[in-house]
Image (cartoon, rainbow, N blue to C red; front, side, top):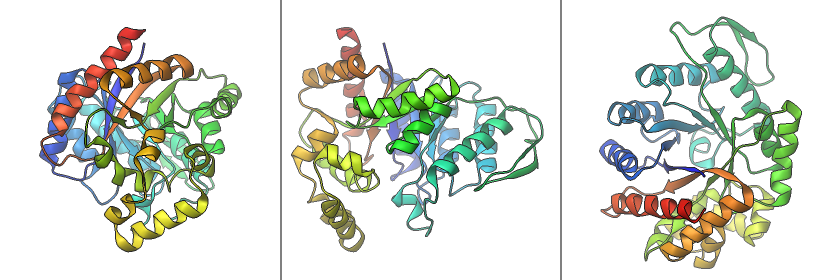
Length: 325
């Protein structure tokens, strides 16, 4: 059995984000992850709005170590937790070009940065005063000035080092798209053996089951693919030169121009795609083959009147996949 949730890139209005989250809860989704992209609406403000306008939906930022000090992240998580105890968790990524690029920030030593971020967040949310000296981040005499509790931490790992870190230190290891393999999971398992933690896996990937859904996903993958490591490119069947061209066109000519390079066949290799019945069967196979305990569906666009029906129909597909078990 597995749980399901949505991931929102908040590029439209606050009302649209809130409507999507409410629709997700009503449809039976259990969680809502919000991408922290730096120049969209503040992720913690959105999380606050969502928990105040839903009853049980769990919320998390998908955030990085670079745009906020980890101590600020801990305080923000604890603040939302105070409004909705038990409904807040954290998803950590080593950074993304959509947020870091305009800030002129480099994802320097991402494994080290993510490890130190998680250590600081966990320490501060456990209560008390802390001194932690790291290579990237440090705190001295740091203590939250209000009650807090530990939260579940997910790590999105693509490269071998991040997969190893996620297995070692995270509560949940998130695999992005169709990148799971025996080798991929072995990297995470080795990390889990270091700390004797059990390995829990989540799948974060798109789904296309009706006309137009591949087209709406295409712009999202102009960022996802360049931000992925070389082994993911190989699995998707693209070359480093092709990826460099995609990134160059996106930066110089815009996302729409870059989207033209991403074929339907490439998207089908990166996503769950087909009829609703085929998608449910595919999700069932993924859960059975790799042991996924969570599935997260990216909602890449909030524009138009297709979003709320898409959320409801997607929830039904996950339910049907559960029944196949």
